[in-house]
Amino acid sequence: MLLLSLLLTTLFPQQLKGSKDKVVSSEVEDGFFPPSKVYVEIANFISLKNLTVHCKDKHNDLGIHKLEYGEIFEFSFRPNFFWKVSLYFCQFTWEGGSHYFDIYKQSRDRCIVCVWNIFENGPCKVYRKYSDCYVWNKNVLLEEGGRL
Image (cartoon, rainbow, N blue to C red):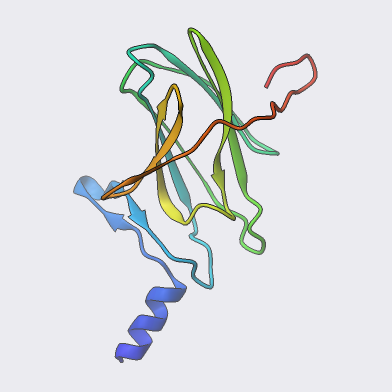
């Protein structure tokens, strides 16, 4: 029975539930199956400035969202079941800066809830006991007309 329990835990990572069944941060290891749904939270920590966030993947444009300092933009999606190719990228714009970053890369990210704090120097992925900070992407992806 213990062996079966360990096997199921490995194959089917579980989401942790908080108050009122809200999903809270969790770290998961690669299982046989990817999580059925991924939640991304992006928080503005740009030195008391408003942050404009524009996220999309190959098929979905999530629109433009304006965040005041400390506000959060959230979205969810279902990652690719067969290949680790799901990718969401975002453009972050504020007074004095504009950058983009791959906010979710299925080949890199092992989270059910991916929490990101956005700073002027770059985004930081937040875990329970530490954060991993990244630099902004160097190349800019442009659509027709020169805009993300």
